[in-house]
Image: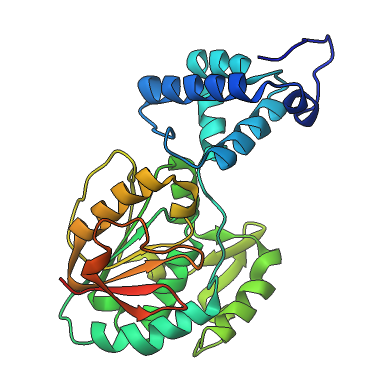
Amino acid sequence: MAVQVDDAVPSAAAAVSRYDPELERIEIELLLEGIYRSYGFDFRSYAYASIRRRLWKRIEAEGLHDVSELQARVLHEPQIMERLLLDLSINVTAMFRDPSFYRAFRERVIPILRTYPFIRLWHAGCATGEEVYSMAILLQEEGLYERCRIYATDINEVVLQTAKEGIFPLDRMQEYTENYIAAGGKRAFSDYYVAKYGGVLFSPSLTKNVVFSLHNLVTDRSFAEFNVILCRNVLIYFDKTLQAKVHGLFYDSLAMFGILVLGSKESLRFSPKVECYEQFNGPEKIFRKAR
């Protein structure tokens, strides 16, 4: 617990420095338990250092003093929980992020998908949707989009709404264009959007076969069978136990010979089904369910 409460609100950094680490951990565990029991969002098995940093970001933004004060406000004021949920959700993304992955997907996975009459893809933890739009562009260019259904899910309704709208910041288009070219894009990137609403609006044709939906990787079950599951840079925020649980969900959701794509810093190390996958492209973390 914080040692002292001044009239002026201390900075988060100053407050953190006065915390007893063990008491702070107890307070954070109590807060996360309260969030789970009151709202159903389970962050109890997220990586501690990451969750702690995000909680203190919210404490500072709300002008509060400590974790216990945040707990009281979150439990009694749902609007603060909505803002905290944005902090706790993993929303770092970009279009054609890691271009070498998209190039590998185009060269190695697309030939396999061409043999399927219908293709189901699941973008788990899609955040604001930039990677969903990237995959839709790639599938259009490869002539597969019309026989695809992309399920784009996230725990956060606010970021899903952003994904549905398809409006992204104009000032990131140079970066996205460079990524698109490096990823092996076949057209002018500007063909896919128009400047509008102070940003850029991507073509509605890219979301024609996309289903945006709430889904919690921690508490929800499988909802279909997929040929491809993409979950990039989400599992790094989970502890080993939760990673194993989510890997079990992915295994149960993948069709035989289905493709699993992880983030560049992620692996199958904590998957209880690690022996059931073959490495399809190691550097790009593309795996194939073999049994």
